Length: 323
Length: 316
Image (cartoon, rainbow over all chains, first blue to last red; front, top):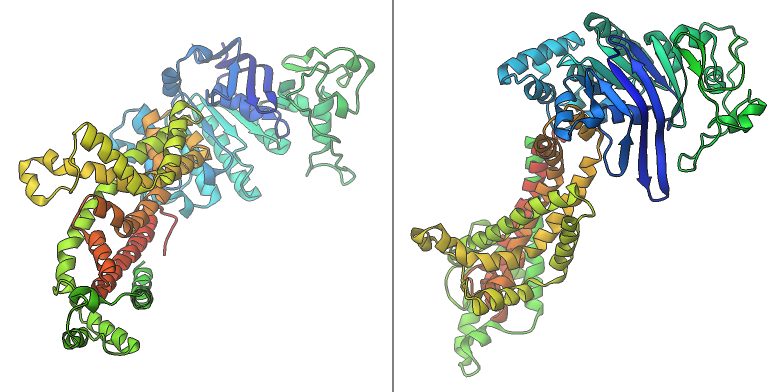
């Protein structure tokens, strides 16, 4: 049984101009200890998928529906808000994009790290403090004890993200969701944070959903990838297979527009022309069709159904890209 | 920090000199002779001259100002022309009364604005938010003396629940807290209504701003209890502008409570200044204005210090 099983997740937001379907009908499984990448451009529904699983979508204006979101033997859709609070931060945790803005500016690092421990593990002040020091040392913060009294603005961006990771892992969650966790950081710091997550993930067997628009980062970290476009998963597969034999027109375009360090000098970047569709309008055919370079006749007739290419590799695309 | 405070404190006397000079010029520029008002029309010229001499009113304006300023520096605010008491004695009687009234007004403003501002921000576009908007509009629109008269009519005359005039005095404390607090209620509401409106609106908007910040999502992602999320994570941030504004408004209240003191016959600084203006009692006007201005200045410095105290990112 998978650790997380999402079936037909749809998240809508009521706006002044109409209902936006940020996520429509997303389904996937995540095994224990597996690292799953969610890739796609801004607005493709990656973050909203994660927030929906965490039950952090504000309702209203949001509205989350799903046939089921099963996690660790629980149906998350059936949990009350009070029950969801017991899970959040304890059994599933999340790290966000901008570590400056994700930490509370007026509370000390110590306070922000210990409050999770006191809340979920019922540790008293002293024990929570000791554990917080351990956690901060674990994520590579030197002289952690002396820095408990510091405020976020006294830390560098990379250090702040380490603090966020320490907080997220403090109650030994079974699932860690990292939403663009390295996007706001310098490239060298990015590599450090990725190494840290990889190491902690292996040591603890934590399952990770890694959200990024950066295919390179995903390639270095994930076992499997879901490619998202316009609120749907358009392709899913093991990382190596998907990179060598992409099965969807969008995945092909995404890889063509990503710089490669290993490739030949002749490799030119080809941007994907056009803009993603407006998610207020109903989408009947393949959402990527207006921008697709490999479209075939069938694409203009009906929406594509997922096609299986190999075990665990499928794409919703009519074009015969995988041979 | 110490240097910043020192720099701000050095500015205080400079501002006070400007304020006192302006007060001096305005009082002298308005028609009305304090001696004539004091002694009446029938008095002999000699008596009037003697009195003018006594209060240096026979000298030139620059001389008068410099003489006054010289005494102020040594702690002497002069004597009241009308009451013949030293201004400092009057101040010692009336300042505590005014401070109590201002404190009561601010207490009312805080008691209402904190829960109302927070509730309105948490439940935007709900009935409580509309109530908050209506309340703040009313607070800005109704002049405090008008509100005072309405409250007196309803709660003192019609319902006879609360006294018509006066505020609590220290002696009443022996009769229990309620006997002391009771006479403060109407004056405090009338005085604090505008500040309540200002502070409620400020807290509502700063709270809404804080609630949309990324760190609030982090707090919820940690599974913290809603009370912790709101009070520790949101309110602590939203209170930073609120507390500084409250300090500034407290300094301001001491100056604007003149009408309230007059209506409720409260023997505070405001009613004393009002009488002094009517009687052209120059030393009292100047002395009291100086003290009111000093309060305002110190309230502002206090606001800046509180800002640094509450927000760890601010260092002077």
